[in-house]
Length: 124
Image 1 (tube, rainbow, N blue to C red):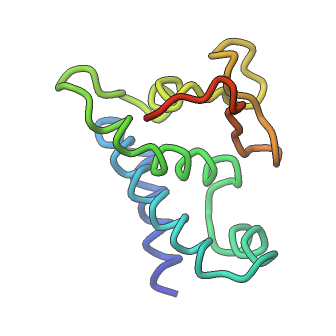
Image 2: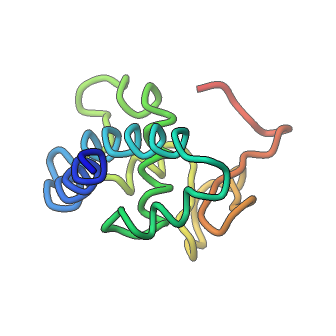
């Protein structure tokens, strides 16, 4: 149960601390990704719904940012994203319902999972 509590604490910090939101989102995304790998196939969404205080889309956003940690975190001082939304924009991810954003990232395998077409993928 300690993992659930720490994941929810990091989510809370990401939601309430504008100055450190991206850092907390990365840390929460790392823990969520690790938890997903621990679970058997088919258990992830049920666990997420029962253990994670925030929404499924929020979990996927955190995991997206964490999976691309070096792209988000290794920018020069002053160029690092100031918000979770800015970090997602930097990665080219659109939020559901967003009409703008980059054209090379589209929702694919799940309502809130992201897919980059092979022909347009780039190295991070």
